[in-house]
Structures are given as structure tokens and as C-alpha cells.
Image (cartoon, rainbow, N blue to C red):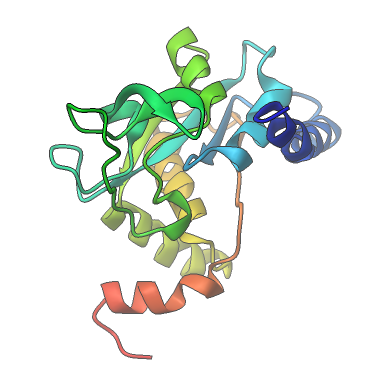
Length: 199
């Protein structure tokens, strides 16, 4: 039943988001965005919207320190198909198929692969996957904390960072859902260290 079991249990996220946006706005969003490590929270948001072709779906991978090296966890943007945990999916691996250690400022996105359903969605073109660098996520974390009073998880800060890139190019009446998958109080020490601060 795995990975469908994960998708089905997590789809409460997307089902609730879909119902709430229809109730509050009377229409579906133009874009939905979620961070993707292994991909459980993202597939939960995406699944109820997959048949809604007018909804653009974007998954955000951990671009770490950049895709030109190996200090990232962007398996769909910089990896290739392989097998991990019994699934054929996109992975960070060497030429012998050995799994590589990745890097992300976010512990929840620090994973060398992705759920196989995301690989299929990427290859089918239904979902677009984009990398966000550590520095971009850190900036989004700080802005969201300062402006909204919400301390987002660093995983979610990756999704927020991408939203901050695309929203200025969108029309004012367009709707965006960004999945805030966790709270960031667990990440305060990591953020402080990255900013050169002591707590």
C-alpha cells in the first residue's frame, strides 16, 4: 500500500485547502506550492488538485548551496532515476548508483530521493519542481517571521521563498496557496547559527 497510503492519509491537507478556498473565494487557486523532501506533505496538498488543470502545481526542492556541486537535495532537478527503499525514483547518486549525501539547511528536506509519485508527476509535466537555495529559504524565514509573526519551519520557508519570487509577476486577483507544513521554533538554533548569532 506504500506510497499510496502516505498520499491518502496526507491528502486531508489538500482536501481541506480545496474546500476552504472554494468556500472563501468561490474558486480554485491559480497556484499551489509546497516543499518536497521525501514528498509526503506535498503529495497531500497536490493530490486533490491534480485533475484541476487550471491549477499550476509547484514543488520546491532544497537547492542547498547550489546545484552545480553536491551540496543540495534537489534530486528531481539534479539527480537521475534509480532505486532506493524499493522505489524507482529520482535520486542523488554517483555513477555506480551509490546514494550520495545531500545538504539542506532544513533537516526535513535533507533526503537524497523523492517519493515515486512525484517522479511520475515530474515526468508527466503535471507538476513543476524548482530548487530554492539555503540563503533564499533563510531570507523567507526571516521575512515571514518579521512581517507575519509566523515562525515557519525551514522546510516551509523554501516554499515561501518561491512564492516570493513568483507573486510579484502575477495579477493581483490571482490566488496562491503555500503549504506551511510545520512550525519553525525547532529551527531557531539553526537559523541563529546561519546568521552568526548566539542564543
